[in-house]
Image (cartoon, rainbow, N blue to C red; front, top):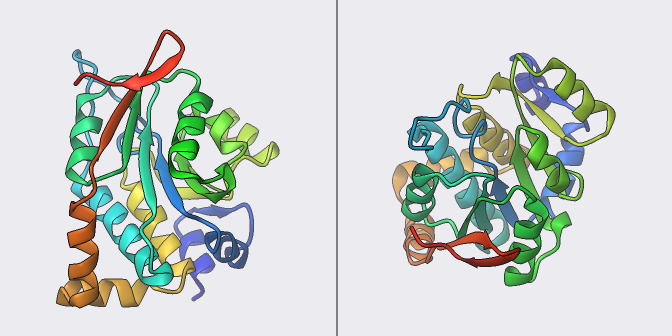
Length: 233
């Protein structure tokens, strides 16, 4: 079964054919994620924090490794959230993402800062998202992964009708949808088996990748008086 057929069998929807996703991946230099509703089901605790799973975390690591194998370069990575979330900060630091942006109700401001910092264009970003606050980025990102939620039927239709997603996950928010999408992208990039085998064997490519990844510093930003500033954690 083809990659597209495999994922359609679990309810995923390709808004563009899988080969077009493969073509778009050629230009991708960064993977950017929303947090709430993407790495979890959107539930929040009284302190404003939420959770993530090691399943999705491994997915992001394998995706970055596969990109490294394919392109011989590290992809830039970031979380852009409308809220402050200590768990997101912990995740970004532990996984050595380049940046964590919090309290950005207008995510275009964070996107502009991220692109200017790394000298990339929105069209070179693959964006994982799930809700209304994310649409300004989804409207300009080069590749858009929409995390499905059963309750959002009208919103999902809006995303489809306005061509704001390239792939809609078969898994729902909170059901390891990030891992699903990461594996789909790895397969579409033609390096899934290679990445898994080399990770399993902890071979030289993976050792070089993980050493360089672990040397990456994470920067935290928030919005203060309309300006992007370093966040105090």
